[in-house]
Length: 399
Ligand code: PLP
Image (spheres, rainbow, N blue to C red):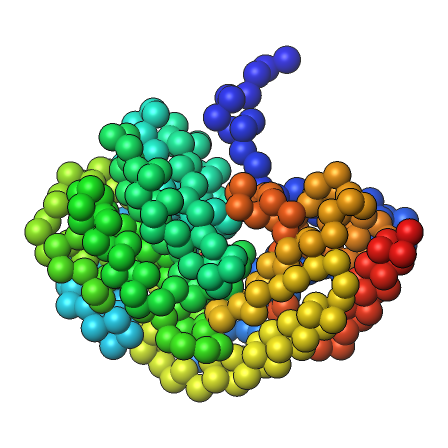
């Protein structure tokens, strides 16, 4: 047998791992309600028409060539303008890099920062590629606690305790996946203060920035004075174009402390040639075009968030914090005597209630005895899922 690398074999991705047992059921003709993947394009959400038109037009107009590794200049200008309006940051196109979505930005940033044994502070629970990609690049995902009783805000004292001499950066995901938390301005300031004290850059994932139900997103990029911040964003969530694989990041780095990291990232960007060219034209249309579609989509999402929160609050054996952003809810399993762990719980719910959730431990240690539900589908589908799930819980608790 030809052996694969330990690096690649060690990768785990809980969100897709649970699909295999669901497929087995589906093969037997059983309908499974899948609430595991955060892809709006699988439900009644599409990128707005002006973006779709711009994508087709770019292809028809012949923009089918390799572009610059850092992204086309017109898009980088549009990103500067969008970020100036949203976050009040004054960056130039020179500070912006276009990527194959946030996922590639993470690869660049971790690849450029980490030597074997270095670590990055990542939230617990967190979106799994943070842990997986840090490990892939030889680093250690150093998880800091976020506190459920405090609306899943980061625990700054825990963050401080976790910093050591091999820590290379602090990653912040806000609004958060899987908890739906929206961080307070005060929390962002505290994170920046801590980063400043230990001379660390902050990596800020803002992919859900305009997807909030209560309150507004605050970017560390908008508050920093001297701490270097790398802000990541893209077309996947607020612009509903997950499959286009287009995103970006930019440096807010007033003292140019990231000069070497920037050079390393540019080297990585050059060996992968360039991001998708026609999609970049569509992204310009998205960033500079009307945003009224978002209001309509957020109204739908809020209705779904309120519905699922209400239903979950009525189900015995679990408790739920109301998410303030994104499209995930992360209930806690209170009644634990019936299952070995949260994965056992999720598999039992799949086999018995035919609903597919993701086990919380797949998002890090603070996710244990929780599960994540995606509330993107219309209320009728959520209703069927919650009816099945409620019946399952009542039956199990009576056993
Ligand atoms: N970051 C977070 C917090 C996410 O939840 C996701 C997708 O679910 C991503 C990044 C992936 O984004 P992209 O499609 O831009 O790679």
